[in-house]
Image 1 (cartoon, one colour):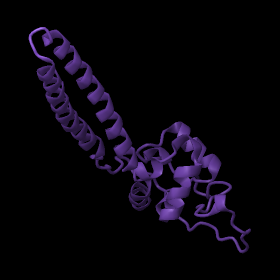
Image 2 (spheres, helix red, strand yellow; image 1 turned 180 degrees about the vertical axis):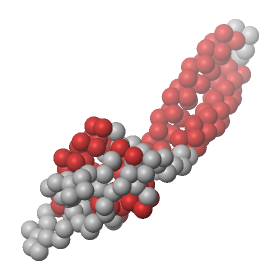
Image 3 (spheres, one colour; image 1 turned 60 degrees about the horizontal axis):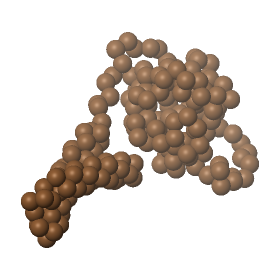
Length: 179
């Protein structure tokens, strides 16, 4: 949501600057025939019109970007054995960097890693980075809490914010049910 506000703010600023330039140009052209007072009024009117048009265009653009495409089920089912993640008996004390850190594996389970590229927003490069970080299976992602999602959004370098933006947890839950 904050990203949408920043993008909307940038859009508004850019469009308002364009409207201001157009208003000044039109006023300079018409200045020979207008008094100083009418020139100032004309600039203000053109700026208000430009601002209103800018607000409408930027809002329409933000609305289009916020509508997410529905996630479709995979066409070809892949047999995957889903097992619970191994439980460790002792945990080291958590540091601030580890708070919310999801349980990561050192390698894929016996059945092999899931095809994480089926999650929208994950390509071959991101899949390799997820595997290197210790994420191999849909059920790992499907089980992430809000704190774990925030940790992943902040700490998995190449895709900051993508976990929540592309709803990876919801997609992973579906893929874990129907691989």
